[in-house]
Image (cartoon, rainbow, N blue to C red; front, side, top):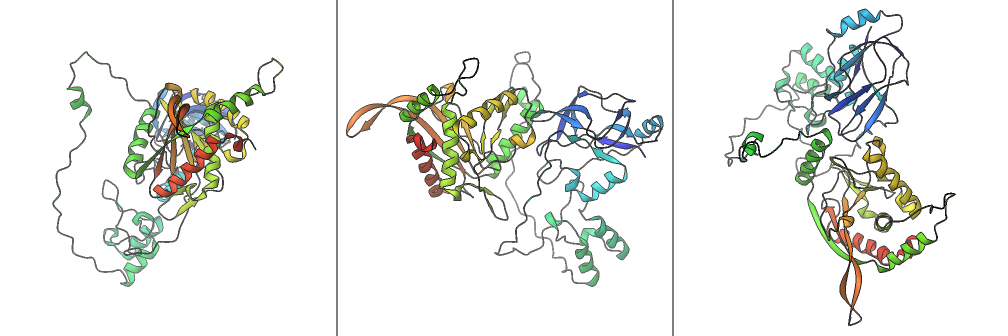
Length: 470
């Protein structure tokens, strides 16, 4: 039976990808682990591997094709002993295993939609495997919280066409019992109908449907202006249209989601960094030389900032958290994301266990991340997760700003430029180098007092950088 090769989901945010290059041609044999294609995701360009042995019978999506949806059929593999010509002929009639949008609008891997995953398996569809990519971890499960309505069954979940979501077993049981799914409230995740709901309906344990509530009058909603309406405000010929690439679309959607779903709270502070600058100069001067005479490392102010935030999160562990609806994830280590500008957007590689690493290791890691990020060669596990983040625009001369939180983080630190300003010290006016910082917090997880405690710990490390060297 021919094996359908699908467009893989190489990152949690990926909905479409660009098929940059085929490394195997039609008629070539492949075995598990062979790199057969290069795919551009919303974050990076990645090599992908075959997971089955066989012969490439038909390539359905040519290289250079853009915006290929996740789980779309892109090639057909003839199994061992199978005629590649017959397998290629079956490609036209083979169903393309497509996964519908999940709640929130994201296309998910087959494991998140069991009723469709079974169909994909039946048709022999297999996604490619990303080289070095990690599978998405399952979402944590927490016991239901108390409170009014905590145990009420969720409303039935339907897609845009009105179809009821139900497990395959529930559908079969309902058909055998002659029960209409439209009248069965689901008790599964997101209102999904499961077998116990059909059993309750069959035995009469299901509650009688309540009368529909009268319609509520609401004020008219102003929809965003369409592309055509916006363009009509400008004289034709006075502008060029530059289509959005995948990364810009993802960044735009993520920023809107972050501001709409995360209650941002902001704290600002000024740090005196004269002692930090002196310590940096001294450490860089003492750096060992390589064979070519170049220093083994060169620390930046941002390296100190990353280390200070990591250690502050260890001092205030209640702020080293991630919010979920079921409970708070309290992290044992400080994994710090660092915003890196790349062509067309930005990416946030994560320095893992930054509290344990010396400044020289953080410096080396960030230089490597920045270089590979600019050519989109980061692997998914290198920019996913993290417990907080740093965004530094000081090198552009920005005095201060507030950054948007990058989920799943609960905080992000915005760092401005260090500049000389007058201050009052011991009743005398003096000049000091001041660096303004703003901490954005998810107020559900880190409230004002806790954020202030975290900021105070961060400032102590910046004011006394020697504590970060021991």
